[in-house]
Image (cartoon, rainbow, N blue to C red):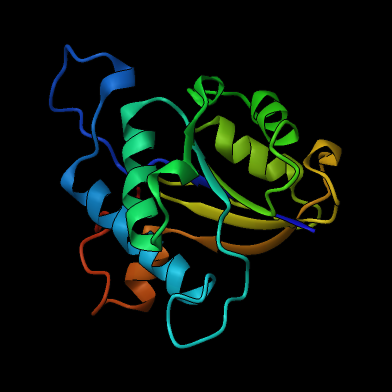
Length: 192
């Protein structure tokens, strides 16, 4: 069994109109959301709290080269407690379509059991929709996280429609469920 977590980058800033899309940084809410989602993942799934881990800790974090995706990955890496050599960049993930994301997944090192991939919509959402067997992810707002199990021994055998949904986390869902812990990580109107 392989475990794959796909995460859309956290909320980025549009404050510098002349800045290239690739170079947009996270805004304050995005940084807070990335840290909060990472803390939830670490405590709930990776054994970072008092409970035993539900999933293996990620072997690698693979990110788009865009600053907003890389920053999301770096913040999460720190919270999860992984060293810098666990973070890899893949330029193919920048604004990638679902098929390109699948190519990246099929090329992952076979010794890795769990990988987190950071990218962009609409490709990340389409990828999640196509690879999940019987689950549906309505949408993937910023910093949305989809955790799945792939019933294959090798990444190279990943196919559309084969993954099992393990969890779907959004900043809004965390803020609604745990308002005292995660206040201010999503938009008040619910449209993240």
